[in-house]
Length: 158
Length: 133
Image (cartoon, rainbow over all chains, first blue to last red; front, side, top):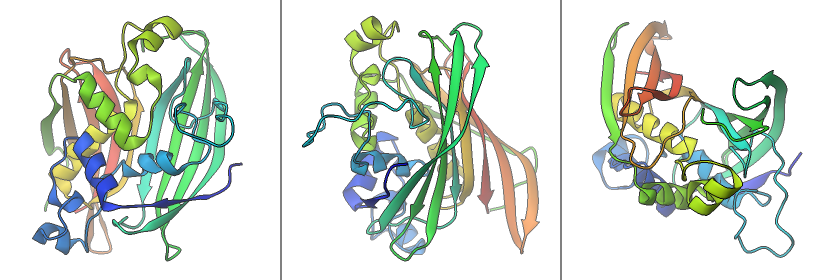
């Protein structure tokens, strides 16, 4: 099980993430907008925690990231797709408490269930869950994420 | 905001997905899987016709429709299955429908079925969200 790591949530990262989703809501970028003030400052889009990948030390899907050691091997679990045969099958979030720009989240990951299924076109399908919890600097659990990854024996057109 | 079972909302969330959209999502999310930006890898290593969008881009766009409809901090749950890949050139429309409304401590909690379809009407993500109104 990987060690927990810190994920500092800065305003620029939230802005860039919202922009990538073509999202112009002021709550995700403008601290002075009345709508942002009404929610206690800049908050984050529903899928923003995915960008914790930038801070995950053993994140496998960034082969050009400069590292002191060799790049981590892809684990083939539900970490959000994969190189080659891996695909992201499902993603689920539970929102317990808002994440704000300026928060420092602690990210804890553990494996969930895994199972096998016979696919129609892609041969045998191996599913694996990863559960990730995002807890803020006050110890408040903000988001629980459950990712389901699938490994196939050959490329599929889903 | 008041919602009742059967209420619907629909929005085009992206028109003609460009490789630039996909690359921008890669940079923002940190997911640099080359299947999403390198045609050579997508075609030769994995046997796909071209790069395709991150599933999480489709989910993120689907989430944008939900926060535009319900508010930036309304969601309590949001989950999807990825049902089809999104290719460059695709146009995606997200449709939501309220399937249940319950009272929870004086607050209205709505369950919403959500589906995002491409220009052929094929679903690319299907899921469910729960929102406090």
